[in-house]
Image (cartoon, rainbow, N blue to C red; front, side):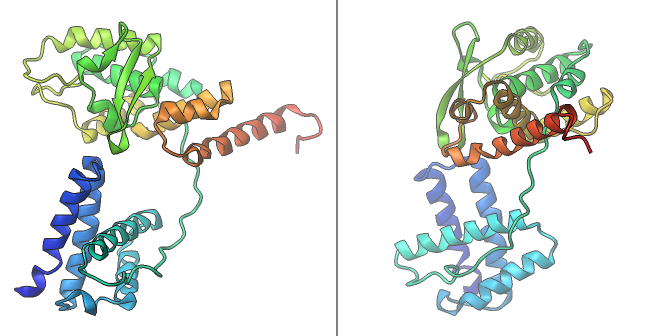
Length: 298
């Protein structure tokens, strides 16, 4: 069927392009592929057989369809970004003259600040003695993510050979395959050393630091599930891995005020991305002020 191939073939080519040429991460390329497959299915459902029939009304209808399906505004923004990148690629390769997405806007996202743990919450989360191989591993993962502000995808991609200077530093491959060097705290170092001892008990053929019971690299989903269970066991609400990264950045900013260094540690390409933590810091200062100043109390 012709209308099932004119767009799907180009989507596959575009995904290969952003993976191989633009060197985007696997998670990013998978997200773009899912988004564009949704758009392709929407177009096919309208029995459209060529790009010239895709206009801004079609694009707006697709965005509206996503909204009707209950997809949140932030995800719709990502879908729109995927589609705009795809049509930019088509235009560059002479497959379209203009992009029908140029004037399309996604719903505005609420300016929600990231969820952050208090230092006391982190202490409570890690205040236990591991009683199994899995718990030793889980503690090492949590200590590492919080110690160095890693994304969970970065943490599971670590190989043993990525540590430097007696484990005082770690080479991390972040978004866009950019490498950065991050320091480790003593609690993280000790937890990882304890895990390396337990890791020897697992038969494996991989250099991956964090393994599952089958001896293969741990998945993002597994870390999410294990962290949620750990939090509940320690009497805390469910915690997801990115909260540890947000907490790292917030606690560092509260202590140092050095936004540039935090930008480097987090692997942000733009300082504006890191600046969201200044809002959190201001909230913290305002809370302390309201509690402490005699003329601020309500």
